[in-house]
Length: 302
Image 1 (cartoon, rainbow, N blue to C red):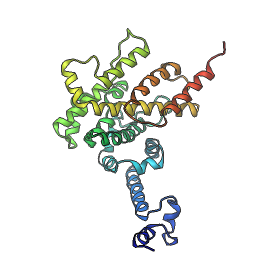
Image 2: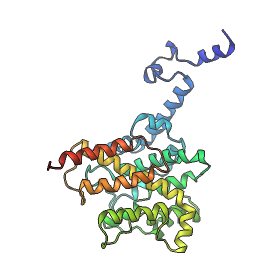
Image 3: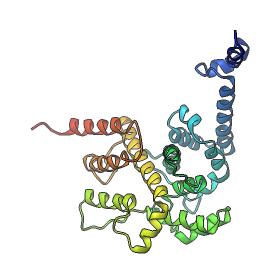
Image 4: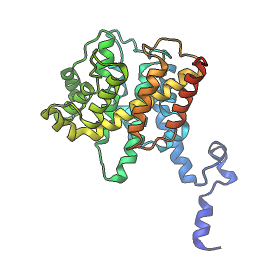
């Protein structure tokens, strides 16, 4: 037996590795086992700080499956440890009560966590193309992308200036604090009542994705930040698509949404098509087909 073969065998799971082999039976390397166990330890430490079962559920939804925990950039766990209380506070009312989602009534934070995990996945797709984004800026911008809009909907005013101040207080420099705060404002839908639903949604997506309809000053800022905006917008659309299917599968689609499923499907179809020109997302077609089948089943035969 050669030296290299002997070294490989010494790294494989043996009966002496006991419970680790039972927990991770498909991972041949002991080194990988300990790395995965360490990653789970980081996540457990974050959850034990709060001991809130709703937060644990939000993380389960955020990561989607255990394999994503292991594929996510390790920096995200350090980011959660450092900034999660701050992020959660921006999705609470003045008395510290958490905002919730419209249909499933889970923490709004679970939607935010899902977007951050998807943003990490899309960020990893950009790196081989030579697009290197500031990871902490991207994650914080993803985390706060709904902070202004959702606070307004719940009667709490959170301004760009307020976000800038808070971000500087927790350690972001002035330029990054400005860009993150302005991204949150920029991502708030800019809709007009004179257009139909699909046209409004298409126009607003194109504003964010292509910089359409912007002033000269806005276009210069958009050019400098477009990759951040595209990652966050794509993650938001895909997270909403996933959640819509999850609600349908669990029988929660009970008319609480303002628009019909067919109207929302048309918007998803357009936006996902544009996103797939830039990013890979394996489940997109499957999720869209699921919604299309539900619409077809609910449409009376002529």
